[in-house]
Length: 205
Image (cartoon, rainbow, N blue to C red):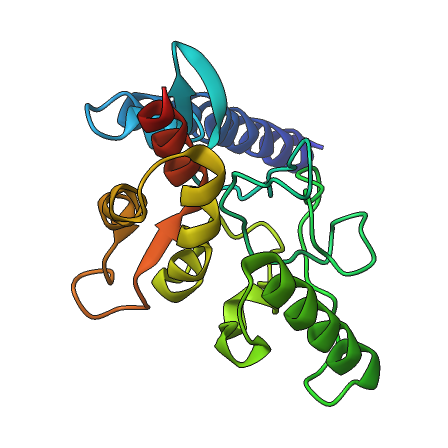
């Protein structure tokens, strides 16, 4: 009986100590680190603001929708398997994340990619051979906030025409929102679509 009481008290002490460490001290430590200057924005979701209002997160790509598809002034994100559109073009569902889970030899995926290529080529007024791979393939998350500089360049003429900006102005905005490789050698350069569209909107006004 005495041994059972000792074991129970020891277990209770371990429970209390671990509760304090993992339930109080650890969360407080994480919160304190997140308050360090330079980390707070990331800890709060990397929110991008425009005119004092939250416009989105630079970590989540949500494809913009043009009021008139025939006069589309926006740069567009990569396709998403979470979009309601059958081709995966248009706004993704930001409440979920994931890919189509279809392989490169899946005939349905091959057909969808060709349809996307033809549609984007018509939208940009170019030959389908000029459409880069990231314009027609979805990312693993379906919420990629960045596009390649090549896909951004493909959209420059249309955006310039529809916004009244010069192509040179739009190209400069693309360059300003292009991020290089991580640590100088990891990954590929990318253009954050949300930040680019906000820059175009600001320049337009």
